[in-house]
Image (cartoon, rainbow, N blue to C red; front, side):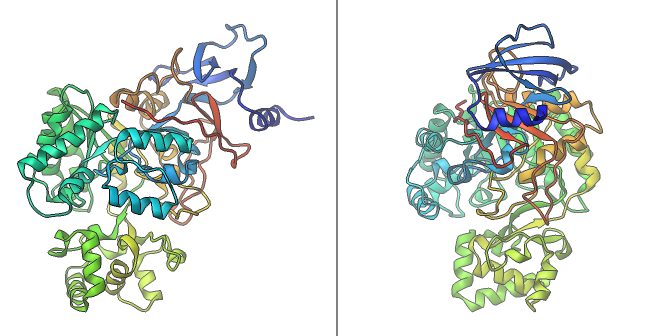
Length: 537
């Protein structure tokens, strides 16, 4: 005799999800922030057909999922994703669906793969084995649709990508003609359904741009209601001027600003978090719509190239690596500079190696000093070796943030969770990742619920980002809305991924539905139902 839970597992994974079914006796969080209630939710043809207090609907003949003891919420929305390419290579997106994410916004931090240069797209296709080519939203949407992604995908148009398409990686101001070309690329992307405009002013070639350039591009957003999302020019010593710059650019556009992974890095800047919050709230009172995203970890993850000191930091990464490979003099000069200046992102004790190269995989998650000692090198020698010999210069986690400042940001009602990660397989076949790629949303939930009611946390994971990014009929459990749903244990929900085990599945997620179809179930973690669609805004 099977138990109820076993019956549900057999029902849901050995046959297609019924066209009509009901999730019964769920502790319902509708996404709008109201008090939860015991409710039944009927799903028909991928859409929520009815929501009512348990026992008030006639469910005769309807397939039943008994959710007693579990909470039901709208599918979580990851508005800071980098799955642009990975969703085409690995459409199962294990890291995202397993933590309850049903929709992602890609193209963040100024980089949007859909509008890459044609020659770079061909390189990507060669590397990934894909055949579909793209160059604008329409073609990219077609490629995504063919891959049948497990989650819904929307895309921002990235400043770095369109600048490199028009100007390359030259450290020069744009000509009027080049600026107009970039405006046209952005305008076309927005017309075709891009979710907004993103920048990454710490990366190439965005770091070569004056504020006036980005403001001029932001004017294309006027009248669209679409946000400007930014990885600001600084998150450290110059974070306050960078924040002011973000305000100006957003005001030049649609008056909507999304601050990517809001933080104040380095001990000298941790105390600036309250000032940043006060600045944001002052702008909100004056009419600027501002939101931010943040992952619940105090170490970041990005390329080692962002740690290159001056004057090397003005050389585009690919070009710098070429110079390092070809010139012993350049390698020696960089080594000398690194030895003199140390790590420009804190200190070496806070740097964790995150390289996915097979030769270094066994060092993944280890402090850079530990790796250097094992290879009988000094830390600067290892740094130069990584930049010279490994693709993209390698990557690292930087432990430059503060727990109290992080919690302060997470407590703000305008702060949403975001993974800042690609959706990758849990088997490591596409490499490993920062633990935020598998645990950001449950981790955000666990911390934020200590400071605010659960229903407000759920709202910030679903309805609020949906409204800010202009999702149509998603993010709320309401009749007529798409049935993107997460069934979870509200007391057990927790991210389990760590630096040592970054692909560990989250705890507490029972079932995830995308467009009404089962896509993930705890009873059979290997099961994947790929029912996502491309979203246009």
